[in-house]
Amino acid sequence: MSTNLKSTTYDAVVIGAGFSGLYMLHKLRGLGMSAVVFEAADDVGGTWYLNRYPGCRCDVESMHYSYSFDEELEQEWEWTEKYPAQPEIHAYLSHVADRHDLRKDIVLNTRVTSAHYDEGSGRWAVTTDSGETVDAQFVISAVGCLSTPKAPEIPGLDDFAGDWYHTGEWPEEKVDFTGKRVGIIGTGSSGIQVIPEVAKEAAHLTVFQRTPNYTIPTFNGPIDQELVADVKKNYREIRQMAKESGFGVPLPPPEKSALEVDPEERYAYYSKMWARGSVTSVLTAYTDLLVDQEANDTAAHFVHDRIREIVEDPEVAETLCPKDYPFGTKRPTMGTDYYETFNRDNVTLVDLRKDPLERITADGLKTEQGEWEFDVLILATGFDAMTGPLLAMDIRGRAGQPLAEKWKDGPHTYLGLSVAGFPNLFTITGPGSPSVLSNMPVAIEQHVDWIGDLLAYMREHGQSTAEADQQSEEEWTQLVAEYANATLHMKANSWYLGANVPGKPRVFMVYTGGVGVYRETCDEIAEAGYKGFELSA
Image 1 (spheres, rainbow, N blue to C red):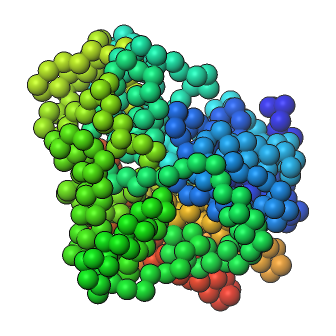
Image 2 (tube, rainbow, N blue to C red):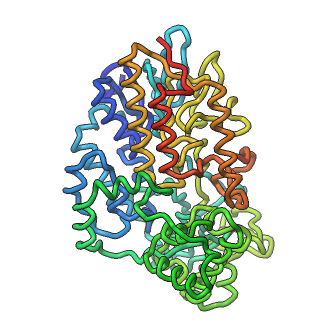
Image 3 (cartoon, rainbow, N blue to C red):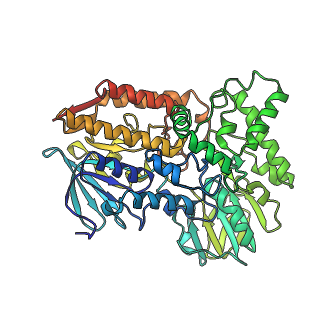
């Protein structure tokens, strides 16, 4: 038995020790329940421990990317930047773990390999990669939405003679790119953040772009202390505004259509939103940017103009302008000097739509039109999002049904929290919830609080099992699809749809109705005695 494992029988097993897992453990303790957290990494932090590539930072401002459950902590903690970098967020989560003495119930360096439900006992057998099996009434997944790195689809990685790194599995020690020829594949969020940092050191950096991205500048810097004081003074009202918003950030909702105003007024307003350095400011400038193509075009063209202003080479600027999907339908990214980096003499952009990759070679990369030699390769190729972390485990429900079989045509959930046929299994920010279309700590706290309230309700009413019923699951899954189809999201081959993983079912995996509406729905279900769940003793 692991030295950290105090028992083989628990009320609950939590998988993952990031934002979700830490708060879930705290909540379970408050309910007087015994719990253990299994974490595959060698420290707490989840995404914010493993994603430590140069330039990694959050795309939500630091004052809002934090827990709200500990009011003393939110007054005491001091952020240093407008947008927090990975080391600072990891330090924050480490502090939370220590502040609430959570580490004693967290088993590190231990990956859950399987979770099997036993109908006879009504309990779960959870097995780890060290061969240990524990018994639990509840299994709560806190594995995150972007925690299973995806390798490139092209062959030959094992042939490469130089060093290579995936942004999602970056080493702890600093990587020195000084004097190196570096190639990077991918211009999603991690690529956009790492590219400017590597370009500062490398002898030459070649960026292989598969799909251009809409990137909003952060205008990052030391945090405004007047802002800090104002937010801390009004945190309760600000937190409530975030909970009731569309994206989980405290912004007033838009009031006008982009098509209601004349071009000059619209341009001035977009310019004001752009200067704020916030994705959501631009995305929520008008009411219809995600539902009307003509309205969306006004925002897309505004961003195109900014790219053309910043990038000196017109051909490079056009290559960087997204043209074949609407603005905001892939997660827009935050960048620091991203477009400016392509003005450097030591940076080359390769458009893989014109010159596709064929393979990785011993010396570098081969495209249809030539070969490139590198000392270092960086894979910014993203993640198998949403379902990937869950399906990486062998999860089996009633009658031994694998979750992978249940989801072979795409994920089916109730509220993104529960799966029919898998009693007492809960998925924090799972597919079918707002999760990655929102400020994650807001979504996480809502899920953890809701699960905690359900467990307390079950105990008060003498119930031991909670399971989504099949009809409610199908209705919810259909609602998620209908909401997505009512937006422009379906026009983009995004990881929201699983389009970045060959062979993955094309199903929009995120609830697009907004954080506030989703919260109201969950509250109504709870008030109705957890309608849609079968509760039994």
